[in-house]
Length: 376
Ligand code: MN
Image (cartoon, rainbow, N blue to C red):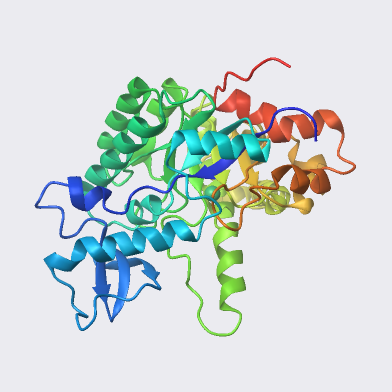
């Protein structure tokens, strides 16, 4: 694969003590934190276990106390980072060197554990504070460090007014995209309450990105086959998100709004577009609102999906078009393509026409996320 690559799906490794160090004291006990639970070191938010670490807690202290919190937080932080393909994910200079060695020019950057913390929260007040702290850290670390980075700030969607305010604050700080959970089960995305948020994102030309695996547990299944069941459930979750946004008229009412389903593969998209249109036509008597066009047309115009490795998606371009497809490396996650992104892509792109390949690995992301890609 010749030419520049842009990864539309990469991650930071945010410090795990970010919230315990900076949240207001009244929110700290329920905010994201490292605690002992059932003898294991866990990342908690409210009473939800977000991540269970393999590191042992302090000897003889299954309950943990204030004196040990810093130690177990650091141990958890070390374990989390040691599982990644690079230890430098949150150091802009190391990150750029990694990108260079991987042959990737630019990247769109999502959280690591922050989005599991932020989007499992039930308290709107806590979510607003957690998202703002993360966005400040992200901006301080990456915005201005290089034009090759497009960090994505988190919206506290349980509070729509706060999300509108955060969108405008983020735009002023130089963010070019915003993150939402794939699912909000207490108030799905067809709820009219979200209208001001869709309008604000549209007015600010801020694409809204829905990263797979957020807003619900990633491990609903246990027992035989659980790992495979959980993966397939998680990456097919955006079928729902896409359908909510298209069928409810959100995309129709906001023609300038762009939406991205992240790290979900792309093979399911063709059938989902077909199924939406089929339902719209065949169940006409039940369908509301009526739309000017078929639901799939709105996604083809305003929607995108990212994949690492999905040969099925390339076979389906006759149904989806190629404007909606974007490749992502998932750097620095161990399941990502770093440091062999070009080799992975060479295999996937065998037989794909050059102009299609260029859009999928660079041009679509460059346009959507407003990267100043060097000419050539
Ligand atoms: Mn990702």
